[in-house]
Image (cartoon, rainbow, N blue to C red):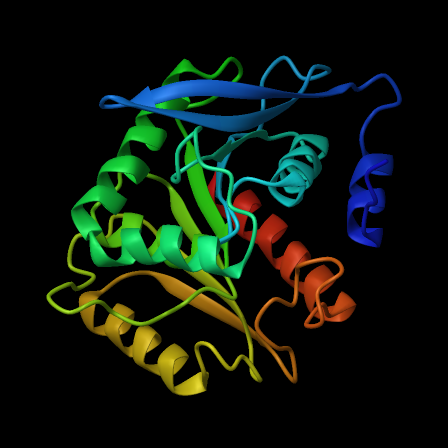
Length: 249
């Protein structure tokens, strides 16, 4: 049985009693490679509020992304958790996670091809809309910034405790939509210096942006069951996401 946070329960009770949240796996291809994502929709809505793409953490597509997709469907959005590792991958531990994420960090062209191909696939999702925001957690947060720098034509980008470093040779000149960052002040992966640099880069590039910092929160503050999980930061960032989606979509 899936466990929901208090914010998810609140979202669920806010929907109509007859609403049904439907989640299903979605197979697609980018180039010659096969991928498997997850789509969650609210069947009680004739017109969704918008579409949200979710990029997975370094451990690949898991129940975590499925749960977040369903929580977004409860709020009235069509959610598509995309896959950037490939349908044939099945990472089982830290070494696998590092190898798969590292391969994409080292080959940014491949990384962007998979992100852009997944974005294009959203047009084939039943219930998807033309107005789209992309969000991601940890590795997925870094992926969201990669898509933004690549000039993805979306309505917004949201990073939750993502890696914030700017790869050599890249900049934010091609960003076309607002960027929102949710970050912990005690994050040992991307510290406050990295956040400050990112915000300065966005300001200099003229990119609309915002950030919400949670004091004392560490790297994976939204990941249930992790040592870094922080209920207050999880709920606060989820509320902040809802505000961003309402203002953007």
